[in-house]
Length: 183
Length: 174
Image (cartoon, rainbow over all chains, first blue to last red; front, top):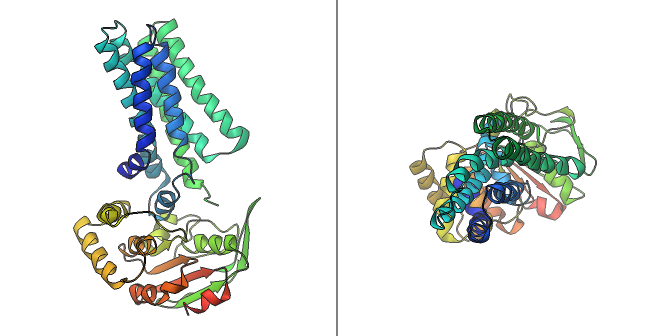
């Protein structure tokens, strides 16, 4: 299922990685650019999992004997992997440029983008203002992680914040998928 | 199904009462494509009836949807855009979703592919994907009447429920 989802989103994943490399080549120092860029990419890839965008895959998954939590875990891996890959490529480009913040990017950005992607996934099963609210929440998650890691310089707190948000977001996404009506 | 109906802000179907015995074939015709799709989704345990009762085997999709989906296979109306070279990968994907043994699923899929000779891949692949799990019930959402003979041959002794938007199309499946 993960392979199939990554395959149908392959162009988007490739564009995201390309975008991360390009921005890393011209971005100013600091982790602000990678954190917010990769969070944005995570949200875009998460929104690509919206039911109806890949209709046949959706129907196959809906008709398969899977529990909501199994479906949620599999679908959640797609934006997490894609956003983490974009982050890695960003950091590799920074290493290639001998940028001193490359290790910080690797330390700070992945937990933030994963929490952001998992929060944004809940937007895919909603419409209208509620959908916009979840996208804003995803951005707020990244902003919270940024505040803890960059402004407060407290990496353990950022990691703990992201783990808690990711756990709650994935759990809620699974429950929503179990109740989700495809019509 | 006993007075099973579906209602949301944008869609409505039923109420419908239907008993489908093992191995029986029923083709239902509806006034709109949307209603046909909703009934097919309800019959496959994918959409939950908002009123009335619906059982697939002994299971209620509202509380035991996973059990229902092991019994019922769903074939959507939309054609699948895949090349012939993608067939093994598609079957591997479907087999993984249903937790089937991959080699046996591929072998059974090839057998079904031969049985469905003459049917366009865009319509035969989703049917094969549903049949490899050997469900007791196959639910077809607005199948192509031109392929009725091949579909009925491939489904063999399984119960078959097809929904249609035109009575003439339903006649081909009875």
